[in-house]
Length: 157
Image 1 (cartoon, rainbow, N blue to C red):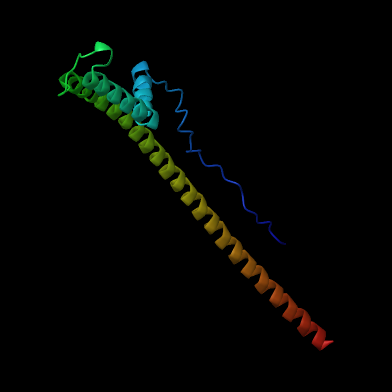
Image 2 (tube, one colour):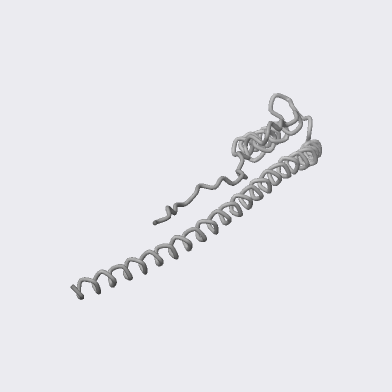
């Protein structure tokens, strides 16, 4: 009597998750503002606007166009504004980068867990395949023995 042997489907707990929608986590207003400032501060649009403001500022103060002369040549007021901008913008960008690093770390952890789960499943499949190969070898041995037995009985008749 032949025994049926088949691969049973095993269910392992799911470890993967969508990192863009992390279990209903919401961002604070400050985090959203930091992300928006970092996104704009790292764009060509910001660089273009920034250069235009600098050129207009210097042009107005050097040429005295329209009688405007609020920051003469060493541009001390401009340097103050630029220093303040850098002092405020740098920590905001760092906050956004820290949040991005946290998201990247969570994604890496999720990838690691997924890889571990896949490795466990592959090992289970390898074990099942080895069992199937042993069963196939046993069946082939039985078939060969049966064939020899049938040949032996045919030769005697």
